[in-house]
Length: 164
Image (cartoon, rainbow, N blue to C red; front, side, top):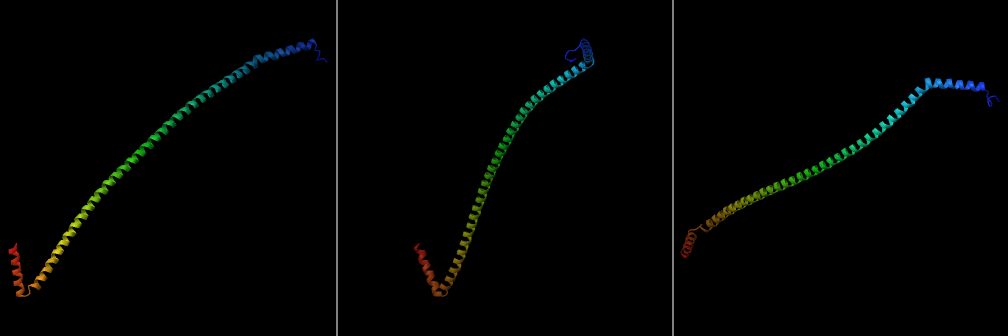
């Protein structure tokens, strides 16, 4: 029961011991504790500020990355478009060249065919003329084998000449 109803001596010594502890805490502990708390508070604020800065930098980097990606996509599209145009140009040039070359070869082939045809016709005419001469020679030899036949032929020719 003594603690429930403390005596004045107990209260005095409790106040003295509390004051000494309070003085010692104020003298030695509170400044370092408050300094550490303030330092901790500043480090938390700095960390929050750094996190906010990092967040802003990330947003800036992300928007920059999106811009770079958009530019890269646009450049890729441009390159693909140019490649398609070049491909179409090369194909059309190749078709034009092939058509011209085909026309040229066709013209040369037609000329060669015409030349061969003319050569064949000339050769055929020469052979026909040669055969005609041979046949005429053989006919004349058989017709003119006798003197009477020769005289009759000469008179027929003379009659034809006089008529003309």
